Length: 132
Image 1 (cartoon, one colour):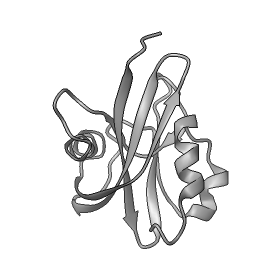
Image 2: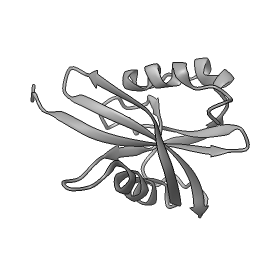
Image 3: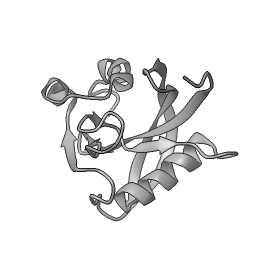
């Protein structure tokens, strides 16, 4: 396994007390699991730039990030990621399935009904209505 840590930016997109989650495509690593929208940062890219780009590419929306609300480092069998969760709002567009197999707007009380990527669980456990 590669020893470097991959920087990943994820969006906590909030609307009316709910936040957006996406199901990973089956053919990808951790396929079928739910996650916050986002992805790997590119060389020289900040987590804010990355999360804006990823949401445009994967969801077809323009978001406005405000701040990093949580961070976690997690080691999977194939990769170690440092995941930064960025609070954001949609400025333009409506989320579309351009990359994921499903989307859902959920409240913190809905979290147990979904199977998430392991790296997301520490952040999900700290989410509350106060965050939203």
